[in-house]
Image (cartoon, rainbow, N blue to C red; front, side):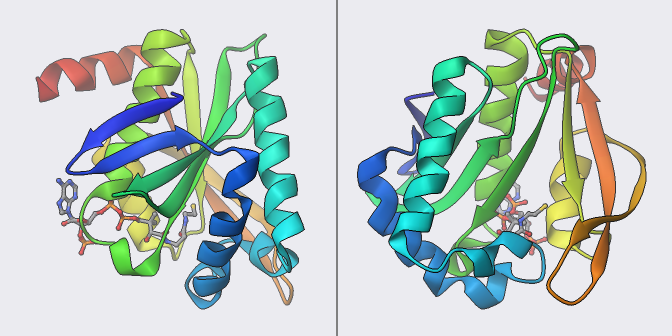
Length: 186
Ligand SMILES: CC(C)(COP(=O)(O)OP(=O)(O)OC[C@H]1O[C@@H](n2cnc3c(N)ncnc32)[C@H](O)[C@@H]1OP(=O)(O)O)[C@@H](O)C(=O)NCCC(=O)NCCS
């Protein structure tokens, strides 16, 4: 996962400290696009906030309890996909993602999530992976639905936004389901 090709000039690469400027610039350009779904966006006010996020991801990576990857296209950072924290006892985790507004609609995040699920299930031997999504976030909900996740329920008012509480739909996929889905794709 230090550098993983997704095809067509796209790469996943661990976010490192020297990427902080690029990450902050990407976040800053995409505030209006991200704000409805990602309440942390307005807490990122300066490059040091992006640096702190990267450092926290690197600590998770060093501990083997997750990571934050940049999605790169021809050398430019265009998005982020992260593994939030691996629960070793239960071999489970959750993932989150976002993409530059101008790069949506080309299947890029579906490809990135596929690569991360391969890493989590095939390389790290996890049992269960969750994705939590706002009910109204149809673009994002389409990703777990396309990849064979099952919807398990709704967490009521589980996410705090500046002006409201938001529900979250929980999707999950198990290792045997992912392996069967991969065999079906091949
Ligand atoms: C949610 C988000 C990551 C989706 O990114 P994306 O790359 O556009 O998503 P996908 O990979 O699913 O792309 C699917 C689209 O590409 C098209 N596509 C083109 N080639 C494709 C391929 N090979 N495989 C899959 N889809 C493909 C699909 O038809 C679909 O288009 P549509 O949305 O018009 O129906 C992005 O919209 C985003 O960052 N949103 C804001 C932040 C956010 O909501 N994050 C998630 C919080 S839970």
